[in-house]
Image 1 (cartoon, one colour):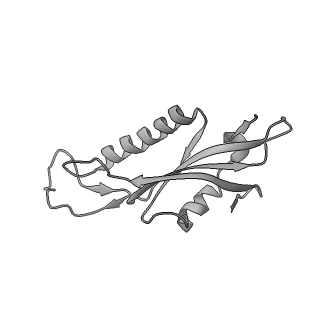
Image 2 (cartoon, helix red, strand yellow):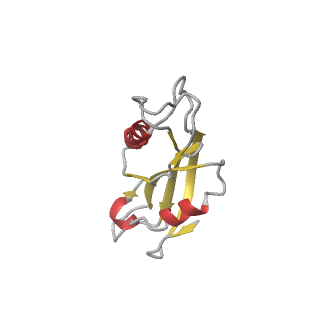
Length: 139
């Protein structure tokens, strides 16, 4: 359970996690690669679930990579946290519509497998404007 700044309580319904750079075969991640990866995660979640998705901005860290040389066209290395987490949260319905609950997919990145969800991420999730973004679900 997470209490949003609005006072609404949301509950974790499902959670999928995977290594952020699974499948990267060569080179190193940079700012552009990471931007594209985060956007692909968002688009994939929308295609899979057909609802709104919130992506919590990941903490990005520059890091020395043995293949990086100044002037390299890929630019300097930049890493996202080790795990990509995609979750479905639920709460009471929005407004007065007849619905079972309201739902929202949230994507974030953290260094260790959840649970627990990283406290910095929980703080960001607590600021989500649920009533403006989530979708009511009816049977």
